[in-house]
Image 1 (cartoon, rainbow, N blue to C red):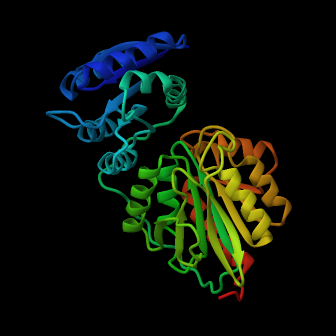
Image 2 (image 1 turned 30 degrees about the vertical axis):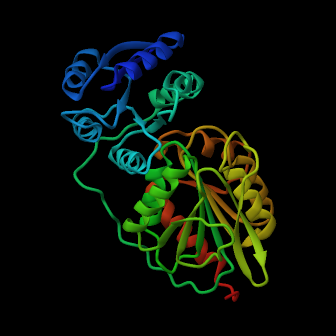
Length: 349
């Protein structure tokens, strides 16, 4: 089945480049290209696109305002076109909260060369977006109360891996976790500037402390550490402490940071004191690491298909036998809390 794509961007060059990439992909059909939100609004009604690529920075009505209105009135899979700047990262994180499925960074330098190199990624993300399940957006950002937990010690570490759709899934999970929750390490596929903005946004919304991980820092309860977008996050033991070690090695399972690298590290260093979950995402990263974790006696789980934006990474983990249970996203925080209570507290302080 052909995927109908609408391009919305105020830059004629970007519209032209995206149009050419879409036209060259056999399974994609360019149904229109709009220079602003006003034209795009009419095109959405007339052309009924399967996927929209949307520029964040547009005149008159910016991309975020258009996206907000679209997801309230007519939920459609949207890929944001974002700049790799701090301001662009903040806006992109906001767009994912508003319902965008994923984003495509704009190249910094030679635009034509950059987008040409991104061709495979763009086509792949459009295809994934077409299969995703966007939800109608309600007013405001819901914030559930944290689940009560009595936990002391630093033995247990929780690991979370995610990709496409993961920023919102991680937010929903962390917002329900108690400030007494064990130290949590998180790998989400995104560029460096974006992980810093993502961590800061989560920190403002959650009872737990959330930060971008730093090399050598001690892992403490009540804190969640996001892997930087250009480094693998691993765990090392330093005396009685667990500490973070950032690794600048090659891509693993097609990614850096890689969920597999983080899970393998947890399996090796933390073992059966680990609780791990894999959330929505495209591909297989994390599945092998989940199998390794389960073999150590760690508690492992995954998000179920019905609540995933993209049932890729969790499916791979389930198919490989790495997970004990699957849970819907709205039950995941409780499942993790119950697992922590089952493991019990340790004495390492």
